[in-house]
Length: 78
Image (cartoon, rainbow, N blue to C red):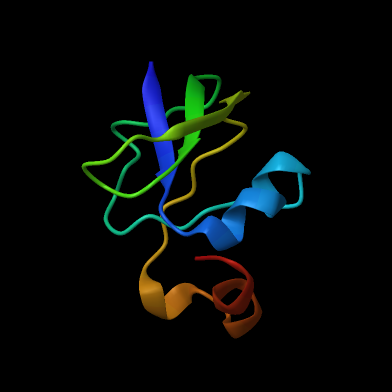
């Protein structure tokens, strides 16, 4: 099972209450994350204990170049 980890505690409330529905990851991760895969969503800093928030099913994976992202998406994502 793959893990989607979020470092910032600012996302904790959004994750727990279902208000965060997308994430931006640097680089093409389409080889790693596929539609239908189950992932564990965690919160915590690198090299420290991470809190498991929940397990989720990936609905879709979209790869875009940074310049193709709109400003509103950038402001509400990572």
